[in-house]
Length: 593
Image 1 (cartoon, rainbow, N blue to C red):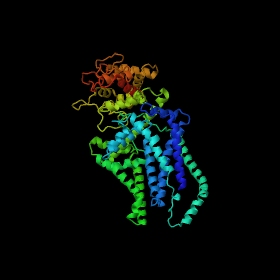
Image 2: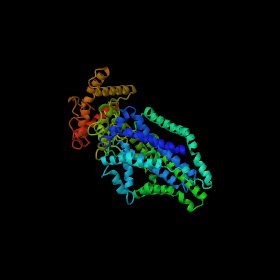
Image 3: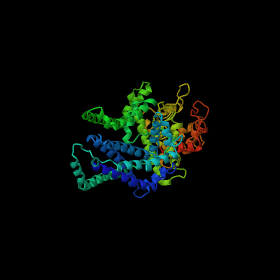
Image 4: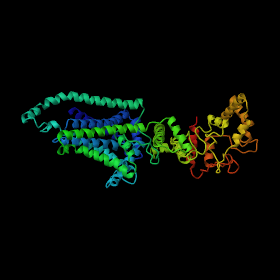
């Protein structure tokens, strides 16, 4: 037990030392926090080691405090006269958890921001003092510089000082008279005289145990950094991104899972505040159980309650991981088919949809984080703060704007551009790979596929665009060889439209086919052979073409405002700024195959 206590003290010293080193670079403000952590992680020599040590030493400290409390429980050192030892261990564990949670927000990234947001929202629902405590912690109506400053103060000063004072002043059972009341006073005094020799013998085991703990922490840091490629840093915090898949840390994941059984604001308080508080209070009351029960019964009760709590926490943690696993396309397609035909979904079906949405959102969050790191490395941090990194980036802002303004009708590879699948079915084309060679080839072969015009209907329910499908049916030959030849011509047309300045034989073939067949309806550079008006194909799918289509779909070079197959898409000229339209267009253009 003494060895374990000394290792705990050593880890606290490691955290204090690495924390001081991190403080020399870290800047606690919403515009500088993320950038300073990025600088520590990627630019400071050995910065990733220092931060990794600080992070994993915190996790190790929590685990060892749990182990220490278990030792006290098993060896019955929660009983009088050692109850202060037991209470000190429990308070130290609570402080270590608070220390970990307070540091979660400091990088001011998406994970820390939304995780802390969820916790403070739950805290605010606590009866009587909840709102007051939340306001004191937040420092205003919403998260900002004051929030970061207050949590930073808690993390570097108040909580470490309180935890350090408790750990360094841990009552030692061997220093208290009455460790074993059955021993005579003389035996107790002889034990005190032997203490220096015993302490000397413990130096080597303590050093070995501490070295082993540090080796594990360093190995974990290296593995996460070098093998997994993680930098412990998500994308910069974005208060407007309400689709972030927030999950708590490993040590509180069981609480998140348990809250699923408590729906509604009142029951949520019961699950998040009342029940955990009651369990913690029960642990603090273990020393008094002997006043009601016999020593043996009280000890069995303490061991039994602890076993139930530990197994429940492990089971809920496993369940949380199990629920979040990707359900696979087979299960998902089954549920989607139920939605399509209007069958009521079961709770299991809804869980499948939630799991797929979570995994989509998690993948998107990982892409955002990777993109933010790339932009920071190539362009540096903007003066207005790291949030501008992704806000100005079409590959990040484009799908977000698409999800907000376009996914009501369109899809992007079956989802809204951010990984979420809207419940309402799409009513227009899927724009993943829009205007790529593959996309155009598929459109020419089967215009009424759901990926193209198949989902588009007029207000009275009739198909909105059938002219091209009818035309393809009319020119499609009967023989298999002739069909393959026409499909090859379609492929050449796609190659011609995608690369209008090429000069290959394939490109020339596509140009000839376009002039012979497509130019009857579609103009190219304003020239058209026939009288039927269809969209202009010069620059089709370019950034400029997409921008015009978003702003004015009824433009003369697009689908026009009148006619049998007029534009059904609303104008976004006044709904989106020029910059926003450009970011959607650049994303659609640059993300295609």
